[in-house]
Length: 352
Image (cartoon, rainbow, N blue to C red; front, side):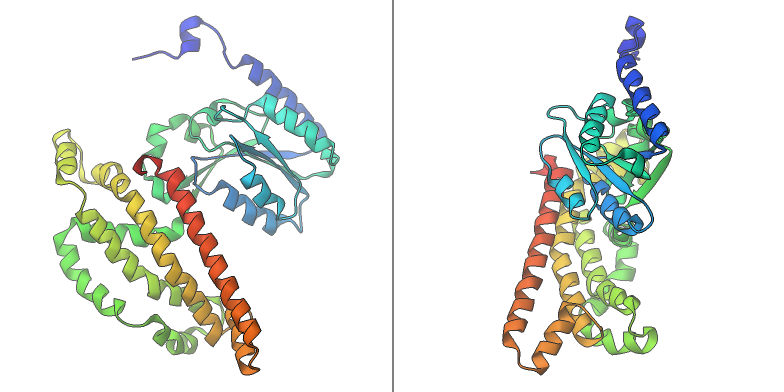
């Protein structure tokens, strides 16, 4: 068993950072400004969470963001587009924000506005489950994100992060329906024999054919659109994940069993990491179907949206608007595809 270096030397290696963090905290308290430190592994959804949160809270709270990144300002630009002040902090080779960096960010923020006019300051830390948990920045609360695609062993492997966090948010829960069923079918011949015929039956039913039924039973709100996308993607995703699980090398599973692994740990620590790249690629491919179904739903039963605009242009033979709508649809789809590719490079870099 290895003792931490600071215990071995009898030194507090974080004393300087802690002193600066307390100084930052004094400023926050004087400004009556709540500071939240948002932390997670790369690709868990910190920036997406902030985009949605900033938009949802903008009417009620004055907010700003200190955005930490090692080399780029891409996430800062995304958040700036929401309409709130964002100060990018480039850490270089450092894998976390520390109190001194945040202090520097506050000085830059004060050049743009009076911090006392703010209600909430978000600090988006660098994607990392180790160092950010150790380095306080003066925050009032630590928020940790954990995505369902990371597996259930992260709190065990990175206990400090989840012990220090005041709040843990589970992200990407919309992917949950696909993973358990596909993995269960891939690992259990009995479940596969029971469900695969049903999956195959529904998979060959064209999703748009369900639109009249969805309108009759669920009306014209958002729910029928969500159900249409579910019908059009769930069964394809499930069967493709099942196939990915079937190709997990048996040697890996047998080795894990020899070392005393039980079923659930083997699924989460052996099978899930092995299939992660293919699962993400499956989502990327089938995202095109989901995006197409959104447009189809808007063509048939919607009061607004790109599909509705194309439908209206068709009535008046405005071919230029139709072409423009198609181009916009294609560009949005391309951006989604590039986003998934970037996520795959970050989350599954070892597979490249």
